[in-house]
Image 1 (spheres, rainbow, N blue to C red):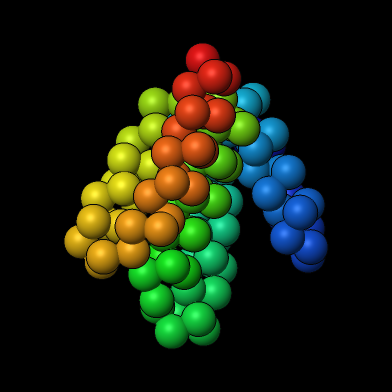
Image 2: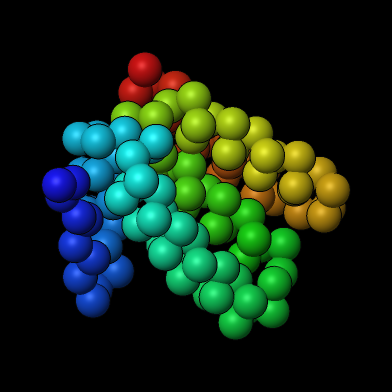
Length: 111
């Protein structure tokens, strides 16, 4: 029987458990994928509550990239940040480009 990822009520605990699941079981684990889906839905609700602004959408992508990186999935993290860079260009919010490039440099340093 597979071990379930137990998601706590507080956001830091959810994140911590998800990172642990990514590291221990990988991104293709059914339990990890389900936990990642729950986390994503919660984050998307926050984006919606913020009016689905480009800043909120890009902030979500940055957080998702950090999650992947902390879980050991550097390629996924960098791909997510590349998508966020494209979004800054599409939405005309170039001020966020610098933040994304800083995150890319940090994550590339993790390799």
